[in-house]
Image 1 (cartoon, rainbow, N blue to C red):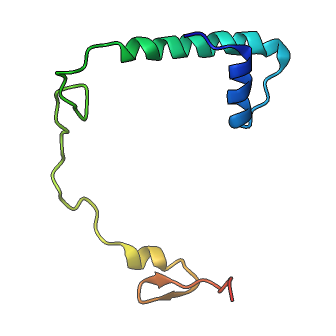
Image 2: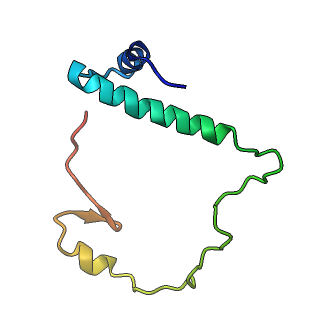
Length: 95
């Protein structure tokens, strides 16, 4: 299914795009190829295909859930100008 210039212009209007006249033929050709490819994909037999979350049959390798760094909050917050109960105090910006 090839697209016409009018169809591409309508799509561009809906997408709030401006396509220059000298670019129109190139855009029509590229979009037509994309639509043709989608038509090919839709023609593929998929009746007995089981949906899957990932194309590769692998599982995610997980690391051990272990603490790798100690709590250094007090040392880090020592540089802050205002801290209360482990929270940074900042000036109020909204009324």
